[in-house]
Length: 77
Image (cartoon, rainbow, N blue to C red):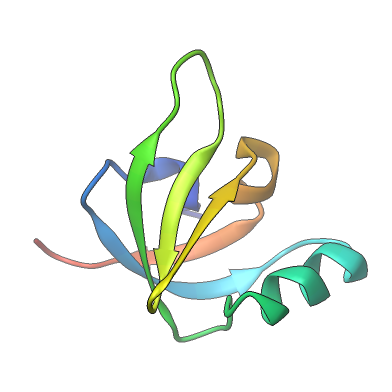
């Protein structure tokens, strides 16, 4: 299973599944995280900090623990 953590800055992927508790799942859905949507990793913070991701035109900072729950299909460059 490949998760959002596996992307490098500038890479894109398609969201395959979100494996999280209901509250986080609803919060992510409200932010535009849906199965089949494209997601791009913009940058990662140092020292195991949060990830800056883009879904559509929305930029979001995610904790690494949250990003590990988002299963993806990486896209070819």
